[in-house]
Length: 478
Ligand code: NDP
Image (cartoon, rainbow, N blue to C red; front, side):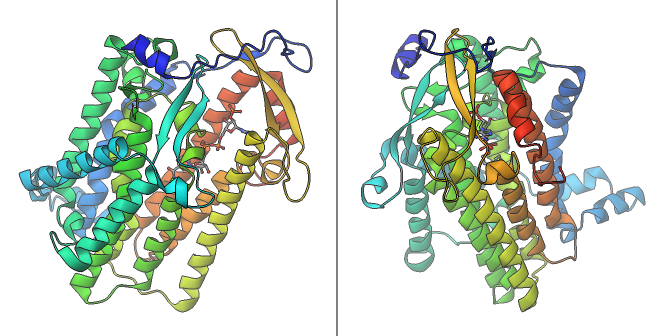
């Protein structure tokens, strides 16, 4: 299996040894791959996350279900002895076979769309890049092929959802909300199942052994993953499927279900709910429109597939990224026009920065610098690095456009958009603001992680880049 898949992946181990200079300074280029070794801090964070992340998800969802989305009330009642952990647990809806059936049908349908319906949308939607695409070079020097059909899956799924709501009435559009906690148990079963499977698979039948990374610590391996691009067969890529399909396709459906529930409960939909649906739908559609670009992001290019991605995509993403909509079912907020407009503007400006920065880097990398950024030829720093097979490769780091203002302005735009989702919920409770706190931690940590990796990859060239662009997220501040 190992050999077969290795052959499927396009082996483009471009040996630049012959013509590649080591670096501009004539030094040995740095070597890349996952850079962090397991120190005690990483290990304790990993164990902490493994133990507490499922409880964090449960706590927020339970707070909405039992305490009208108050985060402090359960703690207060526990402190005052008015409730116990056992009674909270007893009140939580348990696993049901009907939820299991819904979840199984949902996942099976997404597997079917992903595997059996090759992309045709790229043939008639101008400007959309779909179908078979190359991923980025892995640390072992491989370039995998991917069937990019996420936009098509999203369109088919949502067309069916709409057809059901309008014409067929096979199920209620509130089905997701109505089974929210039982579905969470099913999502956990899949999340733990797929992470454990990927862990065992890495030892027994890895897709590409050269791209496996064993740290020597079992908890770290389980959480951060061993295999780089685990696959079953030629096309079932774990990273692309789990992140995109049960995770991100579900995001907009979950929000639609919340909207339907608001309508059912109160007879109308609030402007805050519409704002959350619209702003998050823009983000989701952007993801699928640019799925080929996603192949070049850190998730696919650098992260190994473990519990962090497997469980995160199945549970954390659908349950915590949609907290705003859930909150608005329990606490319907009608915003003033000025508030709604401010939220919309923040969301759209954030999205503009996020998308433009990502687009600039993508364009720059695709054209190898032969493009125009803000009307000018981009400035860049030439770098080189070494893959694990010893091959030396060249790359460029742009210092123009958004990438000349700060090293991660795409994250800044993302954070502005995230704040807009939260602000759409008004200021009555802190629960919907969990998202901006989480995204800030995630993206600042990602920033540090990525820079550490880039520094090991590019060595002195990375230092030249950080001297040229000294700020990370906010020009002049950080
Ligand atoms: P980036 O798209 O910023 O990619 C970082 C990589 O880009 C680096 O590792 C390096 O890769 C390359 N790079 C860095 N600087 C430059 C430069 N100046 N010129 C050219 N290439 C450069 O990060 P992510 O993949 O983390 O994020 C992609 C998007 O996804 C972001 O907008 C982020 O906000 C979003 N995101 C959203 C999440 C969510 O949960 N909502 C989670 C994570 C990300 P190389 O090794 O190729 O040089």
